[in-house]
Every structure is written in structure tokens, then in C-alpha cells.
Length: 322
Image (cartoon, rainbow, N blue to C red; front, side, top):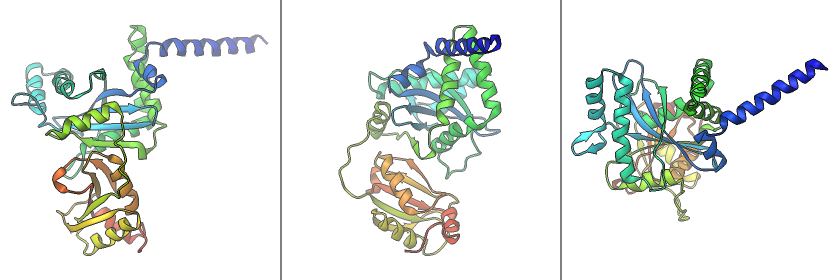
């Protein structure tokens, strides 16, 4: 009986301790209020001198993570770019962490010019390792995958626990935010990882405002229009893919050739990720991924750039012949 009471007391103490720790956590508060939680993401390929910077926004209501890539050429002040600011800070301090914080501060000023007044600037900073990127890769997509995959690493969990414990001893709950976010990411389906690239023109304000407010674009009821570009090196793949898309309700407006590529990407050209996700599903190519890269000059909702991975998937029976 004494042992049972001791166990009950320990369980109660653990629950009270968890409740105390969670109190004051910005992440926990936003989840309770169903409000988006923003964070900076610094993604670094192994051996790379420069990381890529992203803004992550977690939507607890829809259990969705959006990751927005800030390209190195993003203008911050006058002629200064994010990449130049990072290099200058790195040269001045010699400390990559200090350089990253300085670059993030400058990027934050740029974001504050575009974001809604009600949006609080991100305070959390997430560090992830991503695979070495080629010119055809989308940094935001790889960063989103890395944020999902890190929740499977025991080493990451041990690090988060240590960071959380040390922070709580100093009454700093920022480490707890990262721990709770990692727990939440375990429940986020891969299909609800949305990635985008910040445009460098007037479209930036619209895309960023939509991301930060978590408002979905109104549906106009029209079929998604698409272009299909064959970069797989396999003759006839664009025609076959177009048939699959049309069967899925996508209106293919044009077909053409693209520079040969390994990976298939479905680009959202109008700032509505749902259209790219729907086209990716209709394509019937499991390796294909979707990403927002706004480009009004394309005159379609979606661009499907076929790579060798889809050619191989179709050969293996990944998509049935219509």
C-alpha cells in the first residue's frame, strides 16, 4: 500500500511539474488558442559554409507546417542581401551562431515590412541538417522534411531534453517550446508539410501575409490548369503524365521539354499550395513532391516538371496506363 501511494504521489508530482513547466510556454499557449506558432529555421547541408534561412509556421488547428525559404539574394536594406549580411556578420564575429542571429535580425526587419501587424516576430530558432542540395532541389522542401525526420532521432531528443532542463532551471522556457514542437511534429502527416519560396517581387507580400494569417485562398470552383514539362529523358512521359492528370480533373494546357532532372517537382505558380498538392496526387507518381514557387508569367496554376524518378516509378507500375 505504501509503495502504491508513493507511485501515485510521484505520478501526481510529475503531472503538476509538467503543468508548471508548460505554463508560460509560448508554443503551448498558441496550441491551446489554435493560433499559428512561428519559428526561424537554419538549415545547413553537411560541410556547407552557409546555411539556408527559412520561416516555419505551425498551424495547430489544421496540424500543418508551412516552411518559407528566404533565398540568399533576398534584399534586406538597400543593396544588402541576406547572404551578404550573413557573410559580414560571420567575418566580424567569427562565430557562426552570432552571424546567424545577425542575419536573422536583418531578415526579421524585412519580414516586419510585409507581415500583418498582429503577427508576432518569431523568437524560436530551429537548427536542422539537410542533405547536400543540387540546383534542382528546393531548400524549403528539404528543411520541412528535416524538421519532420528529426523527431525520429534519439540523439535529437536527448539534446532537447537537456536544453529544456537547463532552460527551466533558469526560468527560460524557450527550450521547452522546441521540445513540445518536436512532440507535435510526430503527429503531423507528411502530406501536411507545405513548402514555399519567398518571391522577390510584389507577390511576396501576398504570399507571406497568407502564410502568417493562415488564411486559405478562396476556392473559385475552377479546375486546376497545368503545364507538363518532361525532364526525365524518357520520350513520351509528358503525354502519359498528362493523361493521368486529366483523369484526375487537372486541365493540362501545354506540354514541353525541360532540362533533365532526377527529381519530379510540382510547382504551385499562384500561391495556392492545394492546387499543386492535388496535381501531385493525380499524377500518380509517389516520389513527386509539391512546392509553392509563384510565377505569374507561366499563365497556369501548376507546373509539373517530370524527372527520372517518375519515369522509374511508371516503369515499376507506380502509375497505371490509362
